[in-house]
Amino acid sequence: MPTKFIVVLGSIMSGLGKGVVSSSIMKILDMYDFKVLPIKFDGYLNYDCGTMNPYRHGEVFVLDDKGEVDMDFGTYERFLNRSLTSSSSITGGKLFGEIIEKERKGEYLGEDVQVIPHLTNEIQEKVKDFAVKSNLDFVVIEVGGTVGDIENGYFIEAMRQLSLKEQVVFVDVTYVPRLKTVGEQKTKPTQSAFRTLMGMGIIPQFLICRTDGEMADGVKKKLAMFTSLDESRVINDPDMTSPYQLPQYLIDQNFDKLLLQAFNLPKKKINVEKVEKWRNNVDKIINKYEKIVTVAVVGKYVELKDSYVSVREALMHAAGKLSVNLNIKWVESELLEKSDTESMLKGVDGIIVPGGFGNRGIEGMINAIKYARENDIPYLGLCLGMQLMAVEFARDVCNLKGANSTEFNPNTKYNIIDILPSQLSVKQKGGTMRLGAWSMVIKGKDSIAFSSYHKKVVSERHRHRYEFNNKFRKVLQKNGLKITATTKDNKLVEIIEWQSGFGIATQAHPELKSRIEAPSPLFLSFLNAAKNKS
Image (cartoon, rainbow, N blue to C red):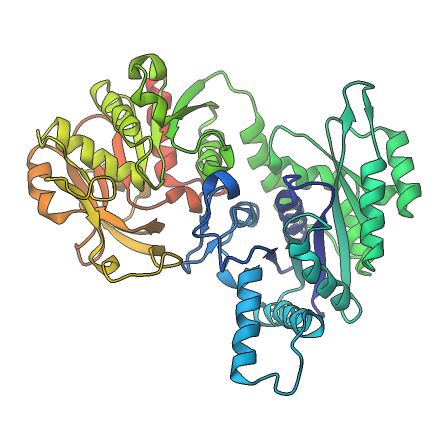
């Protein structure tokens, strides 16, 4: 059948969860055995989000093919349980760059190059080519930002034009606020936003309403009347315990049947086995268990939890698998430089130091790693967390005073972590790190690494410029640090471990491949060790 398109827009404000809605729609279509993939548009003029501040944009999600993409791609992958490619990511920077390149080549000779039709045509061709090359039944297109933003106006116009030629359904994700002063859910913002869309030539077929609590029947009736939608197409999306609950909640409101009717596919049957498998996995995550495990995540961006969303989700996946209640204690690493480490970490069952860049808060992370090692608390280091585990070991076990990474102290005598040789000639910052999926070889079977993965060669995603300095391999190993995985050529260290207790760290980002249906092996091992300690 010809590919069908679902365009998910957001009105009123950002941060409503368009990514979760888009992922839930894809999960539902997957439950009907359709072939479906996403496209995400972001209006910023960056080529990708690799150089963005996590405080502003949330985590940078890395794909197998080295793509540095929006954090919503993590949500897509976790819901679909499959790896995506950079071809699903369209940014304003990519689009304008390609248009200028074509103009310089002379592909528009004699023409005034304009947003309409040149840019909008380019967008439509990208979307249709993606559908054809991937042989898809459905493409779910999430438009980043908010309706009314200058940055996404041309993309929305392109989607309007696409709907004149292809089968397209528009879904508007909106917000119905509850004013505390009157305790009433207000519809006026959504009414105004809907009229803005109509003024752009788009009439959404579905309105998905984010609410604090269930939406009142009267509110649904009012929204249906002012948007000219049938009441059944005004869908509630209240705050939930877990975002993974949303697909079932949408199904409970007959959204799946109404969506297929909109595409004239009313006879298609849902795959009950897929529904049950998803429901069982979600139940494991939201269930309340007797066993409580407290994990401290010691990072430098903890004020914005989205900076570490994949770490959080990987912990949740492992907690569901192990039937434990997870309590995450977010610890600002900079505070550990000024406060007593024990007072801030006392009572935790495990400690994670995730990735990051820059000097701020580094010594606090090292203090947390030392506390974990000396007090036999299970420790998991991710990327920067591996580098600092090596630095702490060099300082406090090998007595290499002042040991550091040249990222933080270029003049350190003991440069335990140094820039990758391949990075020395790099001039540009964007897209030039060691990125994407890389294989590692686990050395022997007597290690946490092997007992976690149960195989010798594994692949994880990476994002870094600095690496363990091979000049210090022997001295650290002589003093008890175990190097349990390297690259296939043995040139780069991938995993290190303490000789006793549970302490493991990897240069990779295993959290990026963790799924609700397939939790990360390292996170499972770590949380199991923390569970047995508590």
